[in-house]
Image (cartoon, rainbow, N blue to C red; front, side, top):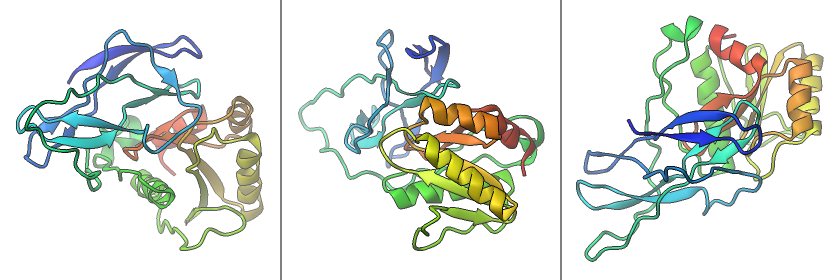
Length: 241
């Protein structure tokens, strides 16, 4: 698989980013063409149009819309990795509708997670999808009876499981401090653990408070794959519930 060096403009940390691969309807693997040397940009505001990119299959010439490549830096920043635009050429297919959820296997983390099968994410297009993707991930981690209510309660708790509550922020702005604190209080009052998932990352003070309160914080890209952004989240992935 192709990879490109990506530097976080927030903390200056260097990463080797591996290009995501998706299945074309013709059966061939396709991958967004990354721009080597182009700087990554922090995502501070999301729009659904900007979060998708056209990718052409080299086998059949078909163009489809896939999630724009993103990288979650351990500093909490969510970075958009630059992609080369797809050139228009005669006789090419028109961009197809955004595909159904693509079961892209993600290698499980080490340690206790070795017994888990590969995680198969749910592509996110709506707020409901974001909660569904988080529910799949919690089930994969080992939580039992993960439930997503039909209507979001006033407590803003999106998911419940045995010994756990979780909140999912699908908005286009970084999750604020108050949301992390409210989840922690709700978990404390219910004598359960609390886990937070965010699409746009976390404000700096929210990230710091998550560390202080030992609340696992995850970010998700539009492929529906959560990534831990603090030590409590890393520990949860490694050890399970």
